[in-house]
Length: 317
Image (cartoon, rainbow, N blue to C red; front, side, top):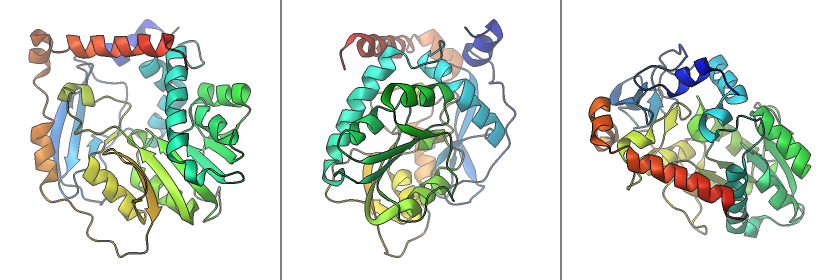
């Protein structure tokens, strides 16, 4: 069980997180100009989020350093956001992951033929890897979370790497690459998307999904938290893919920031979405933290999260 200091650092409202970080340029377009979108997160902790003035990509400022982020995801993230204090994945995560794996495997079924090479980048506890291996695919995962990677290897018998740099796989190696709710956790999502694109065969498909910061039905406060160092909307997610030589595949269903991409040789336009940052600063601006707490508006989101955790714990996979 984590120490009282851990709970103070990660859960106490009106305090900052235990990191130093440093300012960064936008990973998508390289601009250093930005507008502030939020100063606190869903725990009412101090956390500044900015949107790039040129392209609109949202990022944490200051950005955690590579060492700070690597340590956080290797040792603290699962406990911090999934309450996996005992080491392995809790039942609610396993049930939710199994349902999502079934959906993803169904969506990509036309490409998941026996012998197809599949990479799951950010493979978690391994349910999707197990699902595609059952179809006869050659499946491999990348997962920096040590406990979840160990669970995937032990329970599903799948191959999972702790990390994978540019040279780990040859260009054009995979028929299918998937990355589900991973890019928002990365310091360099545009660079990683380009790496995944290089590893993809010319006729392969890349499934990518991130939370949609512009989703309706969720208070702005609920959209920001330390684990998500980047925030995407439909425009910036497609622009990230376009920078990597990818476009939405017309034959596959999409929902905003859940997309199946294909490679393209078409020339790339400017990495810019004029006016998007200013619009996001208005649309996503949270009410002041004190006023939010006093209003009671936090109660329903808290109840909804708890109800979801209960459902995912007890509903069969």
